[in-house]
Image 1 (tube, one colour):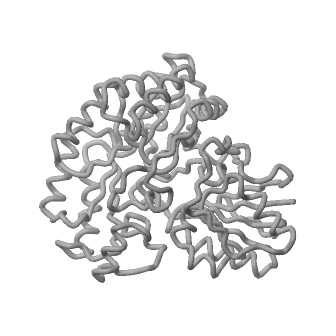
Image 2 (cartoon, one colour; image 1 turned 135 degrees about the vertical axis):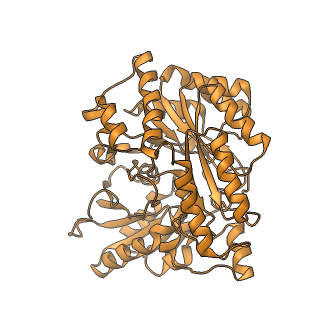
Length: 430
């Protein structure tokens, strides 16, 4: 039997150089399919959809709100051709009711241990409209190694430079940040995977560069310490979301190959200034993720905020606009206050203002967003900052004997001259 797994295209942030990372959700999902099913994976961001409908079942894996309308178009087309369609993923969970109008079955929740039953229902022509495992999380011990063999590696490089591979070490998040939907999707409990299984999966990835996509590694200090200690022998180079602000943890992270961190910079406090400095003291670069348009953001505040970002010497910055994604506290508040300007999900790309800001017009916030990008990268363009960041990882790989030049990767000068930065970064994900 053949399962065609499709990852619909989505629009990247306008101000970023576009490259594509190998997606994570589809390869994790593919590991939950029974062994007797052939899996064909299509990432529409890097390849066209096949014209044929040569599949027994089509699965749509949708992560982002801005993928949903395209995903529904694809689902409608296959159903017109008589192919059953199953939709899942984070985006489907956020837009479940709408998705039900376009799919034969909607899967809500985590798929480990469950897809054999769903496909058996298909085999016996009894697919349910909804498989709701939203609050029934499987044990993290059941999470298998992602099936990265379904990826076409030729698509995931930038000018010949190998992109990072994505891997996760935990699920859930004990935090409940105002603009974030993770607590709705994965619960408020931190659910770490067994460290030995995570390390074994990392070791098996034929790529020295990884992106640990967990919402935050700074959730359990003892777990972080164990994870980083076990990662040291791998000699991988990796980036991630925040790490615990603790000298022991940061030192172990550096020894384990921490390359850079995506750190939310949410105010101009001494705490943020100190946190960036401590990352740098341990040789860990920082890409600040900057959210503009919060209710305490005036025009003057945003301008001073941009100056602050220059002062703390971020290695890179990614600016986004506050976006009221469904099932966040932001969405609930703005919907109640009548401040959401559109429910056109194609506009929910995190670089377009889709709500009424508290202290300025939507048009002015959009202008300040562009000004933030232009000001931060005025003296050193984004591609040059990315080149410097990439240069550090090459130097470290050469120092420990793990550098493997691929295609034109030897010509780092060419990379520095022609591009870099941006792509499928986490701030855009929702």
